[in-house]
Image 1 (tube, rainbow, N blue to C red):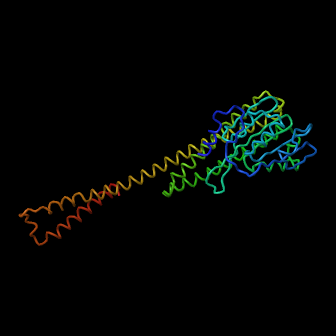
Image 2: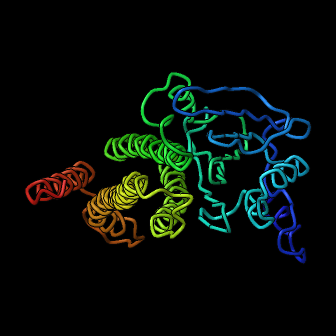
Image 3: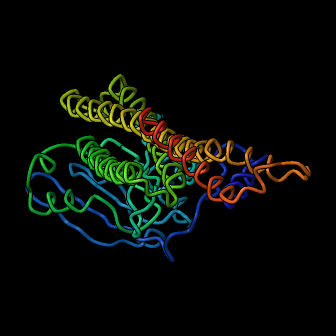
Length: 353
């Protein structure tokens, strides 16, 4: 409900109007700056509004910003790096579909970072946006805490290729870290479905339909997050902006593209598996109902002749000679037991019981 209200605030506003759409996840905007090349690096926290932040010649700059609710801070970054207002508008709209856009000498890439909440029962998502320039990369996140610490450590320790390459490779590394985390979400959902399947087979009926619906929503959310990323990566690889994406870096983006294909295939497989679990649950419920109806039908069938006899001897006719016989009552019960026993024997022989 709250997201709908926030989205409605954009109605009638001019393109490029900066309005934060989404939840506020932090009290203030935090930012960290990495300046590095192959031989050196510096890392420090910066105050976006007061410190001078700008691209540095012959060095790579990575500025990571946590928190999108401070419009003035985002505007300040936009002016410092000459970021187009439409890019800033997309960054502040956390309901934005993952996409890539190129304008002038900068590129915008947005996607969803997915994770499992503290209870382990649902998926949480966060929009992450990247602004790539000639020798700088700015990452925008909704909250503090991310998947990028291993990459920061590689910069600090000069491990891998990140220090020896440009910011386009750094953007690939960050995107690849987000895509790799999709596999953890898929694994979590797979474990949930295995447990769900066991519950169905064990006839544990507690909230099975609710669990199926929860997993279905999670798969839909995952699908909506991954499909546009595949399109964005494909568009990035076809981009003619050699200034931003080096030809040598394209092979890494192709690898990320292949990973999204694999994730999508896994999501589709899990959707089919979930559909099978749902059908299995429906079948188990139907079988259980059929067994109940079979038992009730057999009981009713056994009592039909007994009810017939009871109806006959419940009539108020004066001349019913057997009513005056001494052994009438025991014979009546013997007949009932004989009929019931013979019918039960017949049902067992037919394997209906």
